[in-house]
Image (cartoon, rainbow, N blue to C red):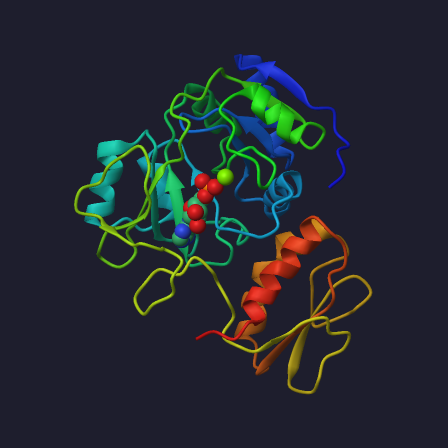
Length: 307
Ligand code: AMP
Ligand code: MG
């Protein structure tokens, strides 16, 4: 994405937080301090808003994002907490602990947030500015670190400005992010506790997975892929295919005509194609760089034969 916005840095007063909340409800990402690092927060229920996080960061691929909520009750509306997960939540929230739990069917979270997965990563942050924004926006907020892709995580408003100037409308300046390291991530999806990322909080008894991305039976996969063969760069559907169109390529399903819309619709379209009676899926070309390249990367992974 070309820098095109005027990026305002505002000291995190109540008035500035109200401005940030308006932007969030308008579908824009805003940078906000948390106790770990600065986050780039957007309305997790709005798929286009989440796509704009990726557009601003220039991230070359989609990862599942952490959803921030004000309290345990709000967290339980999004995910199913077993007894172990609930006791961790009650012991460490608000704080730098993220819990990955089964996503509730009626969570109302955009599929792009979880990158199509059936699990969801949730955290209740402690930072007063992030908490004020959560309260004022009244929406769950998806928020990865507020840096351009490939740059280090920002611990000050100046870092964010240096990295995302012209790509976001507002940075709430809440001083130095105290911890500077990202939250501990624990998965509680199958009756065990598994450490997916080390961080500020130590959870004794959580099994370390050396590489959480390794796909082994019973292990949490951090990538969704449809169960059917996927053909890329398709301009028409073969007899046994369902075509996901884009731009001028018309299909039974469509990703729209621009990258933000396409990113917003991507995982819902893949799930729908997967559930259709057609044994194969074809996807139209998604030309361009930035967000379009991230979509192609995700599609290539989904198309790659799995072991
Ligand atoms: P970041 O937003 O950069 O702090 O990164 C979020 C981390 O959480 C990434 O490493 C993700 O892989 C991980 N994560 C988020 N959601 C899930 C999920 N549903 N399953 C597994 N890992 C997740
Ligand atoms: Mg990051």
